[in-house]
Image (cartoon, rainbow, N blue to C red; front, side, top):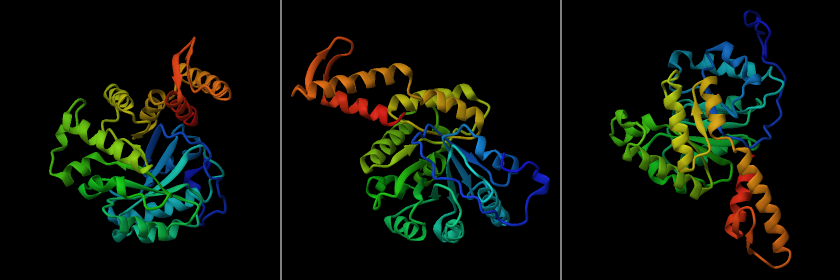
Length: 298
């Protein structure tokens, strides 16, 4: 916990600055409402690989300043966190620019801007954002969906989060089609995944709103992992636990990847880059590169 007693919160910001997150795991991205102080207070204990502090659509306009203050207060008194911490701002022209400017001096890992449409918004956000922080985007508009593969104008833009409900509204499609196996939804997921990967951006799949329906949430995670996703937005600890489990790299995959890496590098040293292995069959450079990808994501 950050504070021992939420009824005795300090009046001023602290001077703590947590270290930048060093792990690369992105299995789970848990959204937190900064008006819920007990949730903020446990940021330093969460099992989520990523935590997003939400200033946008879940916060009423009359309480956005309060939410912003809460984020700054808790961040400035947090000594450490094993989660990658993100702040989701409002669209740049709806207060997001001011929120980024205010938060720049506090210690967290990335800003995520909402309702992105164009490269110019990316450029503006990068200009505002301090150099050591990553930029993430919420993909919620048809314009961004169409042009995602061209939006990465700077390497600090690392991650895109699929806001599927807002995107469907932007496309003029009903939200009722968000069911597993729906071909339109699978197309949206596939295009989002491939366009993001083409641009060198990490794609995070959408948030499943029915928090207590863990069976359907698990089914979505397994379906998305089959498609190639490695990360899922989460509403709370129950979903985090499932996402971490489903998107985790299992012991067999790690053992296989390590064996292939060792065997390929030993044979490559002899000038052999294609050979039969007694454990895993034919191994060549593409198989080797896939193993490196697995090992890099541990």
